[in-house]
Length: 117
Figure 1 (cartoon, one colour):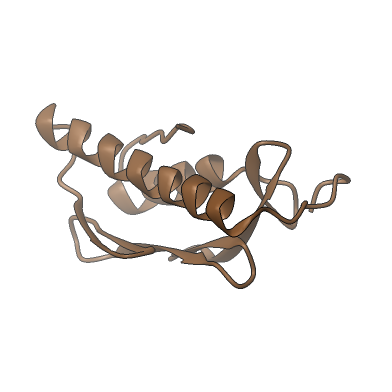
Figure 2 (cartoon, rainbow, N blue to C red):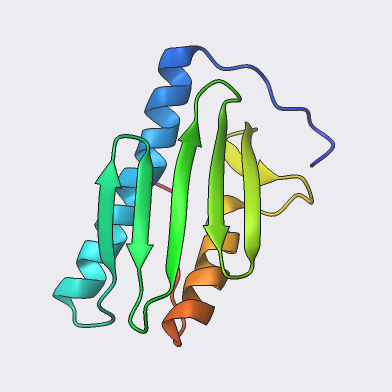
């Protein structure tokens, strides 16, 4: 993780920030569907968002309220992100949206870029 430790958020702040991430991912996928970029099926149940790619692979995003983390599971592996200095960062210091973009591009077979809300 980066040199700056994650600070404990209030439950309300964690909920607001983590769900804003899921909403922004859903909004980006909706734009891609509308613009005929790629057909990714997004299914959300509470704090879990499953992205189904053409060809059958999936990426799963999941909120983890007790740990105040966001989890990302993809073909490339599983990643845990904590909120640090306004960004979701994993242990090696990589940003959530960078990891998601890389995994989605690989699994989608074309360059795909997600950005923070």
